[in-house]
Image (cartoon, rainbow over all chains, first blue to last red; front, top):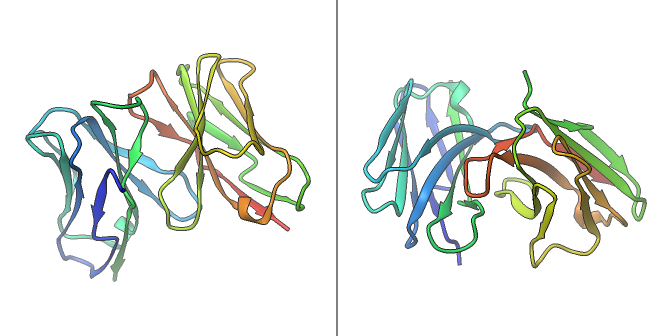
Length: 112
Length: 112
């Protein structure tokens, strides 16, 4: 059973389009992180959200944490080829071991 | 400046020949983690150190060991690598358990 369901798993769109990636769970998380990973590199932390309903923006990226802290989304506006990569959501559950639970990842390709 | 450093970035070893991967950090974080990541999958936690306290994951094979001689350094030892151990190995740190993690660039291990 996947504790964090991430969707879609693959997404290929044209430059300039908008997209949203979802991360859902039946568990409550004390915090949730989004990472971007490029081929041959380690994941790079983009953002951490901790408060239910929280919205954080990083240039063209908007991150939202659900009110109940069970889900999160990443929205990219006017996607660019440099946004290409593997996006991973990961979180620490309120109940259970204090370790990071990962979603399956979203492989995003932005075509010029 | 790099905060989590992994050496080497690429390692080739022979089937059954012991290999050691290294990780160092300049963040002075208490927790250091080792993950295994296979192609297009999420990282899989092998074990972690909270200070000097070693915490093994239940499904981590005995073939994998770790050492943390001081706060800054942590090593992953693979005693007898098999072909199935070929993967990206990621080191990560966090200030305490349950907090956001910072990843190194990874070591790509090839087993011939």
